[in-house]
Image (cartoon, rainbow, N blue to C red; front, side, top):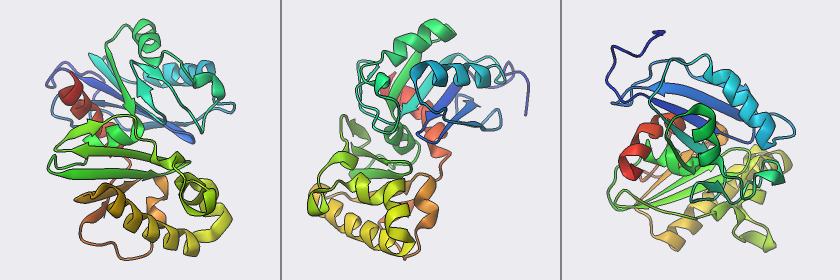
Amino acid sequence: MASTTSRFPHPITLAVDIGGTGMKLMALDARGNPLTERLRTPTPNPATPGLMLAALDKMRKEIPKCDRVSVGFPGVIKQGKTLTAANLHPSWVGFPLRNTLEKRWQLPVHLANDAAVQGYGAISGRGVELVLTLGTGLGSALFTDGHLCPGLELGHHPWLKGNTYEDFLGRRGLKKFGKKRWNRLLEKAITQTAMTFNWDRLYLGGGNAKEINFKLPSYVSTISNEDGLFGGVALWRFQG
């Protein structure tokens, strides 16, 4: 990959995808084309803001100069703050991540839920579209005609027997119930969310989407993990 971004269409976006298991970075040109390889590092344990930001700083040094930053974070985002972080350290609750990164990296930053950023990289922009990310937890983002409905945390919504969607469909559920039952539960969740949101299309992403072993309906599709980075340019288009 090129060591400079001077000959590519600007603005250059540094896309950051923060997860409960791993953190990824990639530079994208103005058209959303990758200018670097995807860099990945395991999420530190404990997953505190200090340790995670230090790890991101280290990776950023390997990326050419960028003009702006897009960040996907696994929790509810409001006014640039991380209001929830169920699969990270509790010290993330209420953390001013956008302002912290802007001061730290001296670049403008857009911040959104990680499933929302992945959705921006995948949706058609027509009708009601739901994105579910099957990873450490269960991420979710709902769009109507390309517009994000903010604040949705379906993973923590009560579902079967008083448990939540995330209890069954997150990584803990996959380990507890095994792949066969996990797939049956996912099929039930597809039916349930269709009745709840009346979505036109459903997109399934996240690291555990590869474990799906049943035939998906025509209006349900899997999306690449890299959409969580490619959506970084779209995030500026929709929120900029």
